Length: 214
Image 1 (cartoon, rainbow, N blue to C red):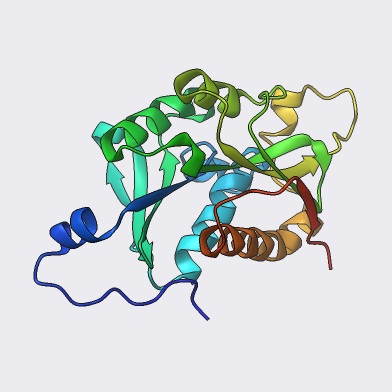
Image 2 (image 1 turned 30 degrees about the vertical axis):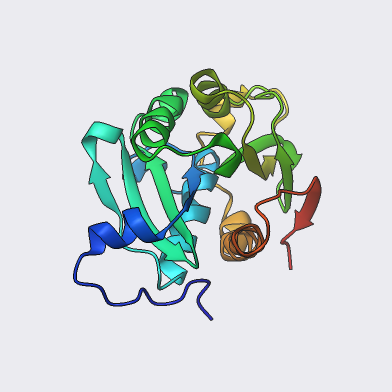
C-alpha cells in the first residue's frame, strides 16, 4: 500500500500546495551525482530515497532544479507537503543544496531528515538520531555548517572497512559487494518503513537501531 493518498483534484495545483498544506517535511538523500557512483557505499542515501519516491504513488518524478542545486520530488500526505531532494553538488557541498531548498520553501530544521551512509556502523544496521556531530561524514558536516545540527538523521551502515587500512574516502567510493547489493532492496524497504513511521507519526525520530539483513 502506498504511504500517500492520491492528491485531490484541483484546478490550481500551485494554490493547493501553498494554501492547503501547513507543514513541509524535507527528506534529504546524500550521495554523489553521476552513474559511476550509483552503487557506491557513499550513495546509500540516494539508493534509499530513490526507492521511497518510486514506491509511493503520491510522490512525483524527479525534476532538476538548477537554482536549488538539487533534483526534487514532491508529494503530500494529509496536511503535510513532502519534499525529497538529492543534491547535485557532490557530497562535500551538500549543505548548499539543503540551505537553498530550506530557504526557498521555508522549512524548519525540526522537519528535516537526512539519509546517509555511516562507516562506523556495520552493513545490515540502520541507526536513527536527532542532532549531533557529523562524526567524520563530510556531507553531514556540510549540511550542519549551512543549517545547524538540529535535524534528524537516518544513518545506514556501510562498514566495517576491509581491508582495515584502506583510506576511508576510498572505501566509501567503492561499489557495495555483490552480496551487499543483494541486500539493498531490504535496506531500502526498512528505510521506507522508518520514513512511514516518521511521516504518519509526530515527526519525532527515536534513538533507535534497525536491522535489515534477512
